[in-house]
Image 1 (cartoon, helix red, strand yellow):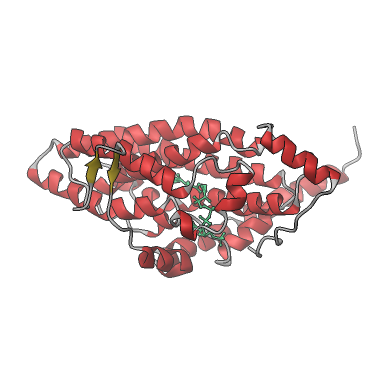
Image 2 (spheres, protein in one colour; image 1 turned 90 degrees about the horizontal axis):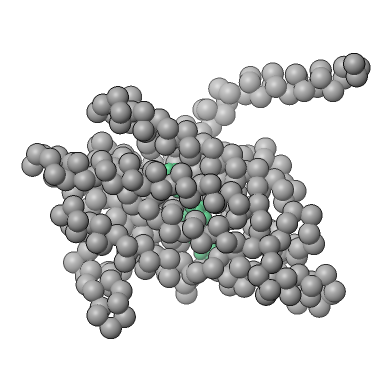
Length: 320
Ligand code: BYC
């Protein structure tokens, strides 16, 4: 995406009225006046979010044919379908800002648009499916529950339903993890290995630390974000430590310790060099993920063309 327009001080009447509405906690709707920079920030963040849902189907989709039972297969199928639905709601919400979905998809397929770093890691064992539900959907709930109160109405409303579904996703993941954690020594070792691999990338999902987050100032001021990246990351850690203890799994961080004064779990330094590599296209699976999306797009092009032709014929037909 192009860079957002610079933050020019604007004391025009519509701009002043817009800021007053934000300060009063009002919801902004598609036909309301909004600063170009607000619109641009929303398109950037919402389209990245929609892409994440769609690309996020791939690591789990890989395990549908290998789920260990019919019940697990049904749950996983339903979950992956839900992610497609989430992508579609958010693309629709983004379109209310006057941008065409085809343009957003082109940005994804050309590699210009970002999507969540987490989906560039491989799913090596069945335990990874448990960890995605527990950690990745757990992180998404922490982030998106707050976005359900974002100032832009269509985005906030999409989050309400998405969060309900994410709760089911998290429970199915944690149940897989808990089952493996109370299983044979080999199952325990498999799930501990998955926890070791997914923990740190999950913490990176919340974005760079606040001092290195160039978009946060705009998004917090305009109440798109209600909490900073670091605040939400801390909330996720605080919630998850007890869940790990309950199933006797170890989070791979020797610096993890409870601070009795702040009442938060302190944690070690995130590997920001790795994060930068992954978001610049050089993670373990970036090429594979984009390759899969490009192939799906090319293979589905006939359906899009047939639908466009049907629409053309329908609008050309004389009214009955
Ligand atoms: N990965 O200024 P910052 C799901 C980028 S899917 C990649 O802090 P911002 C699920 C950032 O975009 C749910 N890029 O940005 C699906 C920016 O780049 P540009 C995924 C990242 O926007 C299937 C630059 O770094 N959730 O749950 O203020 C199966 C500087 O960052 C990441 C969402 O999309 C990252 N992790 O804050 C299972 C949540 N982090 O555009 C589950 C919605 C940062 O300036 N998004 N970047 O080039 C957000 O809440 C915010 O956009 C973020 C980043 C907290 C992610």
